[in-house]
Image (cartoon, rainbow, N blue to C red):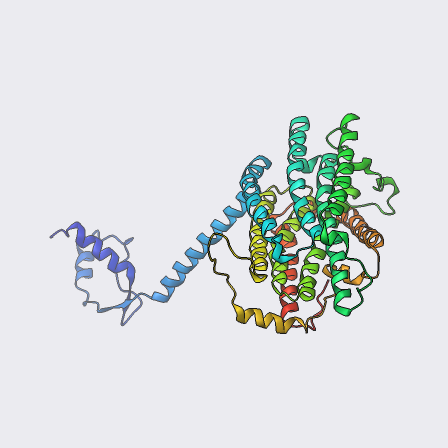
Length: 466
């Protein structure tokens, strides 16, 4: 019997596996391999059978494609699970190492943002520039605080409440100065448009840097003292910020919470700083939108959009603390959002400067929008109305002076801080950190915020949800 060459055997095997053999008269077509032909009679009986007529039916290609698609989906799902596990398992050291370059790179676009914001053609209120520039003070003074936390206690800054609160208070100062200066400028501009400002002097924060610089120096000195006194008194790693004077002792709570707070939980005063910073920044975004109307330059609305990633960065920081700093990957995520936000803010400030007649000294740069879009914005803003939300606190509290405005702002944020700090003790998720849940806390409010500004620009009757 002639042996088949190896290539022929391979071809035959491929043919058998890719086709269905269908017998026309019965379901049996070939002798099973398990039935040996041991006797001559069996051999004769087998070979004397009439030839079996078979036909080849091509394999079902859709089944093959379905199997291939299922295999591809399984590989994708497996990759996503592995990627999610790698992110969830990132340690604090790796997270801080990854975040470092983002924070470093974000400095350069922020400097450019300040430059474009303050070109003479913009007539930006001087106090607003001081407020945004104070963020640099926050950045540079946070560095020695982080080094101290690492050297003295071998923890990250977020796990050392008294140092953390002192450093983060500088960000509250930044946003507070920006909001107050914007508020004063808007009040004067709106009175001018109504013809009521003939006897109202121009606020000093509009014309000069000095008033807000003095405020920044005073508040920065106060923040420095809140770190100096505990350091001299021998504060430990988990010494509460401001000695936790606003915290409620566990035995005085009117209920018994499901969980106990870990040692690195934020104090009420530290939570107030974080939540106030978020609300102040949202109010500043609303002021940018209103400033577009009073100056009749819609490009200021672009700055509201440009600040969105920075607000999401603040939400990420608060989410990180909500989970008691147990999801380190949120640290580089915050850094990346900061870098992106500084770039978008820089571009928005550049567009404002160009729209006000500033000439680029190094040659013409093509701006993304054109005059048609500018005209559409001009037509649209007269119909725009303010939303009901945190970004409109300045308008809602327009009748208040600066002091009552600040008091109401901090009082509201204090109430929110108590709800967050003691309310989360009733839930399981802060104590069983899950990256997907943390991302939902960041993505959902960020998308709602962005969609709200989009609806505001498209539909003047839309009032928002928060």
